[in-house]
Length: 118
Image 1 (cartoon, rainbow, N blue to C red):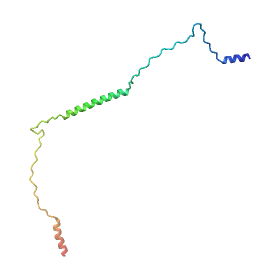
Image 2 (cartoon, one colour):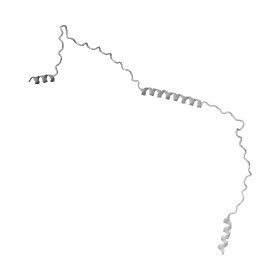
Image 3 (cartoon, rainbow, N blue to C red):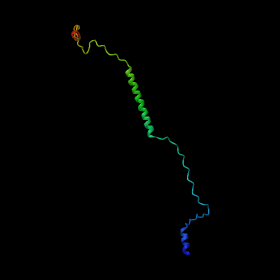
Image 4 (spheres, rainbow, N blue to C red):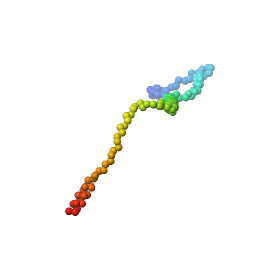
């Protein structure tokens, strides 16, 4: 019986009692409240890249506008008094003489008429 009681006491944990004081009970001090955190904006890499891309596009647009403005400025070409590459003059050939031509059909018609008579 005594063994059973010892086993039961070993199984049930026994809390240590709060020490008695004569003045006042010892209460642990409350921790000081922490300061509220201040929200800060995110420093995202995508935002930085976006800003860089916008700057690059603006520079590209300015450069293109500057090039177009340069292209619009009219610059006349100098008038050349002499041809830089002289072209040889074409030889003038006499016009072709048109001659009458005899068709073989005329001779065959005569031959055919003779054949038909025979």
